[in-house]
Length: 129
Image (cartoon, rainbow, N blue to C red):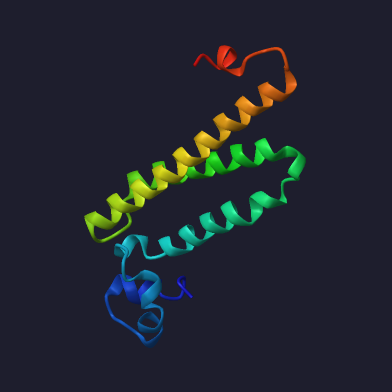
């Protein structure tokens, strides 16, 4: 649907299709009208495709989710697809908050893995805190 809206959006001549799909692109700059599809793809990767990685590789799931979040946060900060500055700032802030959540979960998983694998070692000594 968004691909079919490209020419009318760039020409600033609304059609029935662009009006019907306005909820998908009205918050974004004209050059980034398709950003909602990127946002939905990110959500799908984080909530669905990451689960395709077997549960025995739980740490790999976290690493993939962390990489997706970090790449998205950087691209979002560079591209600034929203019309309003406040929306761009809020999107970057929430993306960074999610990234920090995944980084904390990675750190906790490493800490618990050290604790399980090396019964006599103190994870705090290994990790440095």
